[in-house]
Amino acid sequence: MPRPKAAADLHVLIASQDAHDFGKRPEDVLRENRMWEGWAKMHSSIQLGHDKVLQLPAPKAADPDVVGFAMPLPFLEYALRNERKFPPPKEEDQYREMFKLLHHTLKKGLFRRSYTLSIIYNHINRNWRDSAGWQRAFIKAGGPEELIEFWSNPEPGVGKRVLGDRYWVLAIFGRMIGTSDESREYLLNHRIDDIIVEGTKDEDPNVQQCALCALKALVQHPEGRSAISYEKLIDCLTNLPKHDLEPMSPMSPTSPKKRMN
Image 1 (spheres, rainbow, N blue to C red):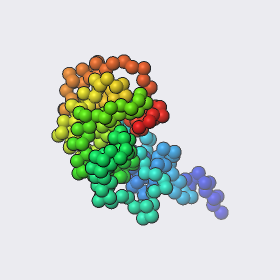
Image 2: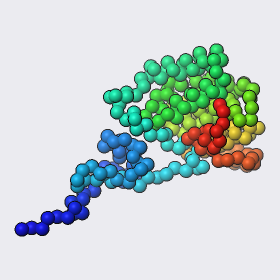
Image 3: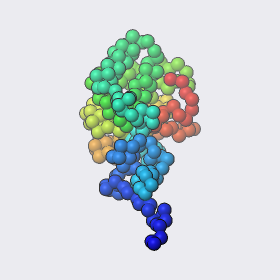
């Protein structure tokens, strides 16, 4: 009678055919297999059954100090992974929300401008699935043009702990440039790179650091490097005043300290 095979003999590793291709990330493999991509942060492999395991490629962690606002967007929340039960927002709903924020909430001054801008940022930074739709809605509603005006005419500051208009303008532009090819092309056509360069010389140290994160995101892409000449880049970096600042995470601009909006 043949000896039963040990459990180790039955353990078979399987993976996506393209799992080891250049640029393939563990979350991409999970999406291909219709699994929640957030597990990429917790597991290097997923048990599929008694003798099958989905082996994930090694993650390539992005350094926020290097890529700035080009950090990957957050995963979709685990509770919302069932799209039949929690469908993604529709384009018309995203446009309606952005239009309301830009042309009603801001124009009527229902809230402090910087607070409303932080809401817009949070929509754009929400997750990888919905961000592109929020960015398209923001552009369609005339958001970049409004932000350019806010940059030129910011509201007076309310205190040292308040992140002002210019900070949030750069945070929104930086996140769009770092995460969407479509948004990056649109913003560069409107010379947003000049605002980023100007921001590195702002008197507010928070604005300077935010501009630096946006600049790092911009130069991660060929079109960004074409827009920012080497001389201009060196000028931005060498003329940054030295402040005693905690490092800022571009994934959550308010994370270093609990600042008010």
